[in-house]
Image: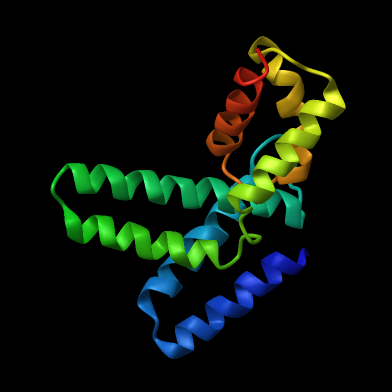
Length: 153
């Protein structure tokens, strides 16, 4: 079993004992999502830490988007609940890249790939994704790549 999954299970037990309702519900949801992912497909498999981080990133993004939708819909209580879940999930994600770190990584990938046109953005993204996996949201990375490539015209 992966270390991250073990940590999630242990933290769930701790949250239950502490009667922390938000953390308990969120960790149960995350572990259920992991189990669903492990049993999907033709055969049962066990997710590694990298795959769990991708799943957690996806779940955190869902919560942020739901919170925005609830805010726009005039439902602040639900928005706050979604943000609280997102914060719990974020505790298990790698530290996010700062803007400076992201800019530097994108610049290195642009030089490495030799791309000088926004049309070839996919090549830069392909080289960059393994370096930023779980540490920056895809839309943020894409925006920075686009910005740097547009400046090269």
